[in-house]
Amino acid sequence: MQHRDWKRPARRRGLGGRAALALLLATVVVITGALSLWPGTSAATKAPPAPEPGCSPGAKPGFDRLKGRWQRPDGGYVIDIKDIEAGGQMTAAYFNPRPITVSQAQAALDGNTLKVFVELRDVNYPGATYNLTYDPQSDQLKGVYFQPALQQSFEIFFVRLK
Image (cartoon, rainbow, N blue to C red; front, side):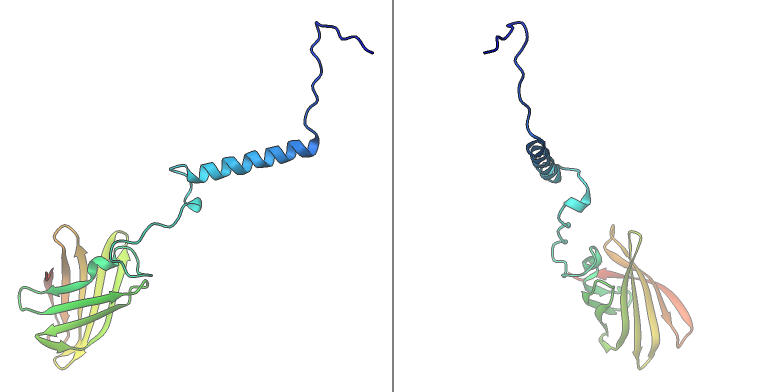
């Protein structure tokens, strides 16, 4: 039997190579999981943002602010924006006061600016267009109406009907 010197500490056996590797991997997994729940971590570990209230599935955030009935106060003309797809294709109707055929309706996001393009093709509306920008402060669509029969452009705006 060996005699131990009381001044020297006893040797401790360390973990074996495989056990140490398993402990290291378990620690990494726990830390990674905890970091994914930590606020401010990368977007890759977070769930996608919730859509805006009332936002259509697949629509770009912000486009739904354009939905609704919009009236030009100078004549009672109405654009009714019913739906907007993610690519900006709009389902819209136009009234003066009777329905006028909408041949094309498109929404676009230019930076933070929402834009609307509407083309009309009907009797007395041979390709008349609206190029509009949404103004969030006034909740209005503002822009230019082009009347090809007269070859004239007019600055106009639409207000949202409640």
